Length: 214
Image 1 (cartoon, rainbow, N blue to C red):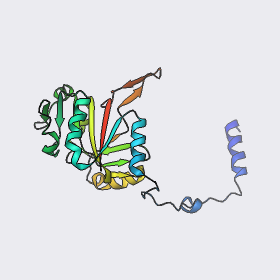
Image 2 (image 1 turned 180 degrees about the vertical axis):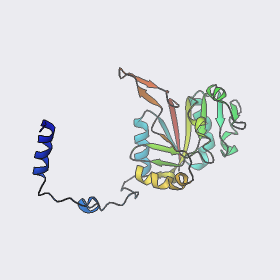
Image 3 (image 1 turned 135 degrees about the horizontal axis):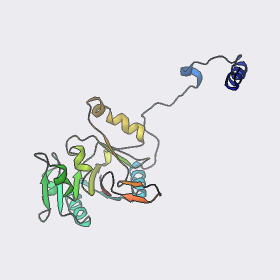
């Protein structure tokens, strides 16, 4: 008998009187997946978490949104802005000195790489992790639009903010069932190299600017 066989025999002997449990009833779980977590101020929780990632967050009423977008674009130092289909014209009308680019064509990766900023809406935002999800439907553009430009201005409606990731995934079910891609944003893009040096902007925009519309 080999050493391996001897060890396995001891394990079998020790487990001889242990009954096999039904995994579905072994550990009962009373939690319902995808329901809201209790929170005192879901919007404030979201803002705090997003700011923890180094992103900028501004809260504005709907009436002030076009003005805030204009100010945000200038704070970001934007010269060329790609505007996905479905973004209201009122949002970009004040940007008379900015080169606004449409994705009709569509734009090549080289053309997108020459554009410094993108504006988009989102599908859902999650307060407990400060995560924003795009399903690339109307107002969000195809995935490349929000990956290649260096700065991303994302408009989030207050009613799109949910408590946590499971609730967010629940909100994304229609998009997932239709096979839409989902992009997850938790602050600007950043990674670490082999020496654990932080490198920003490798996998997407290094700068994230979020406007929460209340």
